[in-house]
Length: 151
Ligand code: RP5
Image (tube, rainbow, N blue to C red):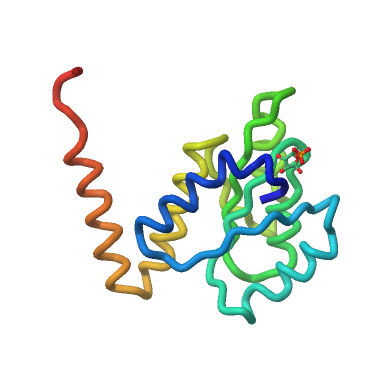
């Protein structure tokens, strides 16, 4: 994530990854305040064994796109809600990548963070049958928890 202030949103992604028993790490990497940290993180990610990157940022949210520019790994972008523009700035910054460097962009805020983790799980599950079963079970539980009547 681009700032510690993004953690309130991005912790929802980490929570899902933990429930699905997916090994992961969380880092604050600012594209504009710590550009060298971003360079080192993105260029070294694949060699360290990472498979998918989830990048959350707000405002002029160049973190996901810059990360995607420096790794061939899938990058999922979460637009963090900003104070001034309610995350529309974050969303448009992340989603409008020029052709050639994709960022899989999710919804603004908590829903986007949750879905980024679930999408990462689905990607990883393609080559991990045990994870596929855990993901299917999670979805089944979610379905079972939808009441037929309002309570
Ligand atoms: C972005 O600027 C971060 O991703 C964060 O959403 C936003 C504000 O950052 P702080 O000023 O709270 O560090 O880079």
